[in-house]
Structure formats: structure tokens, C-alpha cells
Length: 83
Image 1 (tube, rainbow, N blue to C red):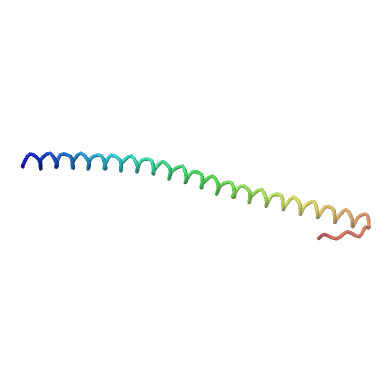
Image 2: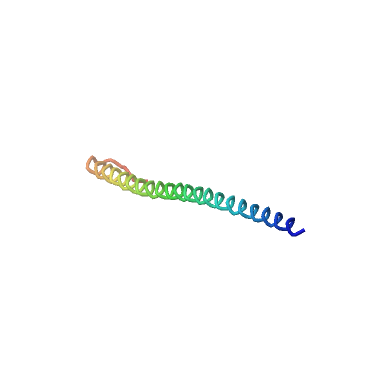
């Protein structure tokens, strides 16, 4: 009877080891996925920061062109209003 229990204990220990190995592999894969997700999120945030800077730059350039047109219209005595 004692041998049976030893055999069962060994099987349970082997199963415990298998579960621990599976858990370690799962944790490693999950960590990799988390890192890739964070990289993608960082890239997305940087893209929007770049887009905000470009939009501000285009808005300023558009305002300069509008100001130029208003000044030119005044010099030519034309009625031109900025909208």
C-alpha cells in the first residue's frame, strides 16, 4: 500500500512540475504580447503628437497666407474678408 501512495505522490509531483512549466511558458508569452502591445500604443501616441504638430504648422501657414491675401487686397483696393 505504501508503494501505491509513493507512486501517486510521484505522479502528482510530475503533474505539479508540468503545470509550473506551463505557467512559466504562458507568463513568458503573455509578457511578450504585453510588450508588443505597449510598443504599438506608444507608436500610436507618437503618431498623434506628430499629427498635432503638423496640424498646428499647417494652421499657422494658412493664417499667414490669409493675412497676405488680405494685405494684397487692401493694396489693390479690393474688398476681401477673411473667413
